[in-house]
Image 1 (cartoon, rainbow over the protein chains, first blue to last red):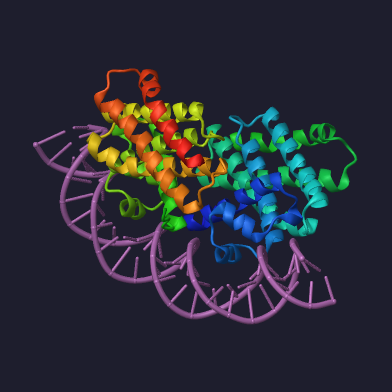
Image 2: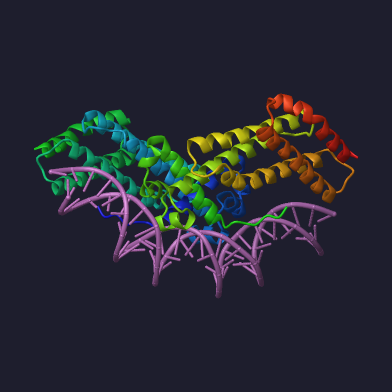
Length: 194
Length: 194
DNA sequence: CTTTATTTGTTGCTTAAGCAATAAAACGCC
DNA sequence: GGCGTTTTATTGCTTAAGCAACAAATAAAG
């Protein structure tokens, strides 16, 4: 789990631009929003806008991506214990993510599903892995930290994969699907308890 | 009315530091807040903190000053017409400003009254002048723009001076004081109507 | 349709802010 | 009280962001 530190100025400036954009979408249609509107609202120089985004479409994609990701992170941070209930809720969150992705794509994004998901998925998986690692730690497993990290990785891929499978291949409802998948996941978790 | 444009980075960074400070005062006593806490919360480098403020006391003074000023500006922006009612309310706002200044000084600031008021007063007077100019414009006076600017300046000094006089020399209540002062002010305003 | 005004995208130069390092001061623990 | 840790205040160097200017594109006005 390697973290590359991003210069805080970059983070803050992107945040300013995205927030300004979202604020403007409340008052104006997308087509009527100018780059000048955005940079004025954000108190950011126009040259700076272009050093971060190609155009306002690029900004919109980024704003949507961030919004979706923040929603996921927020949802995934609610659990204190790794049990059937939390796994079900995590799974539901992931399926909602897939549904949201499709919805945003249809209404606003200029990117393809593959393009947008290729950006968001690594981040979602990373966050899922962090959450699961944290929950496995709380279980006070007999395994050491390194084994738990690997365990969190394997588990997160499994759960995430199940949500992708549900999205692409299943005609079952979310509840029905997870009911069938749950025993496999729980067995895996019990293995980590030692 | 000369406006010097401040680099937006400076404005934003000061805002970040002040907001971070205020956020921390909710969770911690002043004495327990470290510069590190503030800069971490603000996502601002420590060197940057010191390029803006001397120490956390300096930051606190600035945050208080800004808070008072924002309160004044907010209050002064509520009027659509220059009449007895709005003048009374403006006067009340100014007297409250003086009272707030004394209160903040007694409870938190390390600066003397003279020191703090010498920083805030020019800004309050400037804002008052802007408001009065705007209101005089709305009256559709027969005087030209330049004369109205001078009129706004004279008028703002008069009203501000009355509030200072009330603060330092009067045993009357605010309402009693303005009742006596109002005819002088109204006469002056009628002069501008032409 | 023509003219005017506004916006866009870019450039080279300047400035504010980030970084790591340092020494000193302050704090917390035993 | 001594020691280890954290915080402070500062420095020189690097990087992101600001600025004005420019030409082209687009939008608005008559």
